[in-house]
Image 1 (cartoon, rainbow, N blue to C red):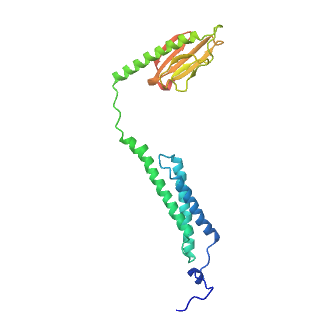
Image 2: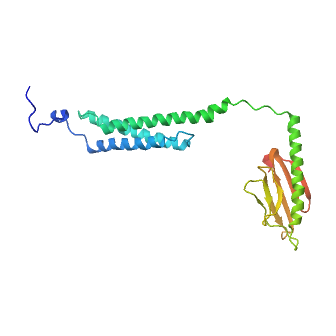
Image 3: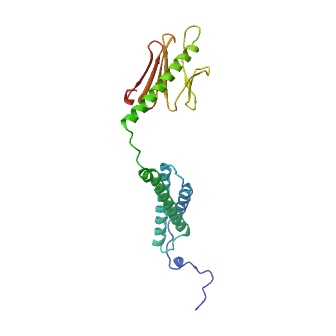
Length: 232
């Protein structure tokens, strides 16, 4: 066997005269690798990620996978071996899609399947519900009386009431603009306060759980009742 002549091409594709693929095919291979890396790095956060992030990663990984396949196919059609960059892009993009699918299954388990596995809540009897409602109404009646008394204490010498009230950041207290505690509130209580007639009259509404509403009016007094949520 004779030795290869000096300067003779060693690439089988070049020896057979296989045409070189277009430059954009090589660029496509690099693109697949970059997109695959981006999708894979984004998929490393597997602990309850945002579903929108999972969708974006899946799209990026899918584009990278498609670009890698197109680049490899175009190289093979010219008689040349698949480019290493294209193969790397194919592997990385596929791995990113696999991780994204696993993350999606985790999300589905925690927010869909796990909810179905929870034991059903025990039914509440009508007598128990009525007792809880009565207790809530008594609690809000006491809050309404305390609020009415404190609003009289913070009333200005000219007879006007505070033009506004505020709820603390922990939603536990109703306070005046000067920081005076008007009343302690059960967590989750909604407050609506308004003054009228030059701030010499007011109306305070307290909305609690189970449709409980307490109304404190400087003219009409205190009313506590159960109101359906649709009537709020």
